[in-house]
Image 1 (cartoon, rainbow, N blue to C red):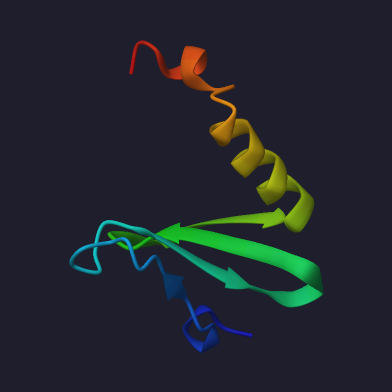
Image 2: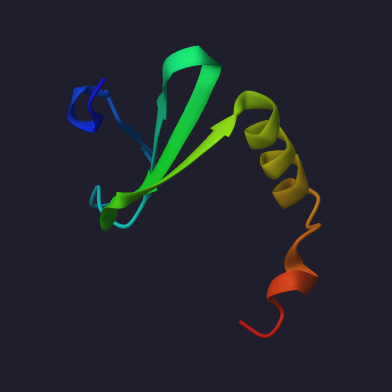
Length: 69
């Protein structure tokens, strides 16, 4: 399956449809993520990893890792 055959979804919260995260369900239960402004860079993760990321973000577990950014 090629990347162009995926049905990438963008957030409805993105005001102009750019500069947002796109997501797609892929083969074998994988989830693929990419930024709309750089679609060639793709992160592939399991649903459990995405769930852990979302829960960690909601719990503010990563703010100390990016304090200097």
